[in-house]
Image 1 (spheres, rainbow, N blue to C red):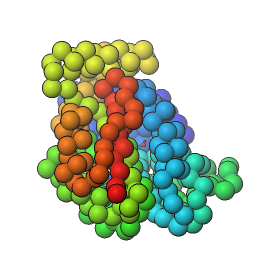
Image 2: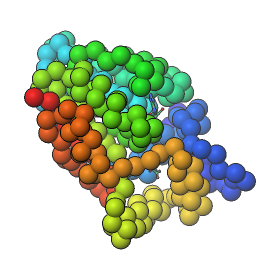
Image 3: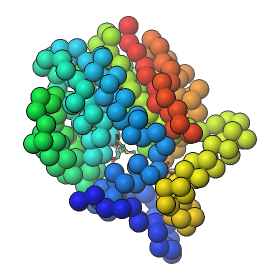
Image 4: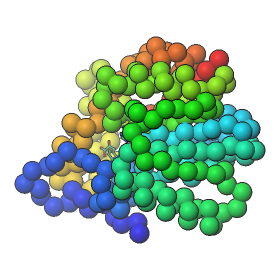
Length: 247
Ligand SMILES: Nc1ncnc2c1ncn2[C@@H]1O[C@H](C[S@+](CC[C@H]([NH3+])C(=O)[O-])CC(=O)[O-])[C@@H](O)[C@H]1O
Ligand SMILES: O=C(O)C(=O)Cc1ccccc1
């Protein structure tokens, strides 16, 4: 069920823009673990932090859930009575497999927080009052102009004491820092078995669809969206996770 990512292993005459289709869904757990430094730690810690902030009888959103890794972690960590997780993705292939993964988890473990998966565009979906929202490497795929309106809507939906957990690939204004961390990211990929060709073709595939911001841009935008406090709680190379709080 979980295949090794060889999507960019053969030379392609034209590298198309990256899409979350069936081929990607099939290899996604392998791809993200070998491509994002710190990903397993981030996913596990999202569960831990959500467990501290999800009050009884509140809603949790996992927006751009892919196969539901963050949802699975939160289902294990959130112990409050009457909590429910809504995982959302607009890629049908991801949603289909996410439902399978969550059913398999339910079958294997007792006392998990209930979770449902909705196929929807997070830019369109009305958000109900909630205690925790997760954007784990999703905002970077949203049109830059629509990022602040989305974050403002999330802020409006969060109850007092609620939090947003936002993980992103970072860009750096300083050219030396950008080059150093980008090179280290490629070294991380190489160490995980990706070839130079795979690294180069994946880079072309994502350059038009994934647009990272600087940490400053993120923190300022979170403030603009109305969050009381925002800071990072994890960084490995050019990948970071932030928490934003509501009074
Ligand atoms: N407008 C949108 N509406 C809904 N979903 C969207 C939208 N745009 C993109 N997505 C979805 O956001 C996800 C981004 S992957 C998230 C990993 C996951 N969070 C994880 O914890 O493993 C990150 C990555 O691949 O680097 C994809 O599944 C898209 O379909
Ligand atoms: O692979 C990369 O270079 C990334 O930045 C992360 C990533 C992981 C999975 C899908 C798209 C991008």
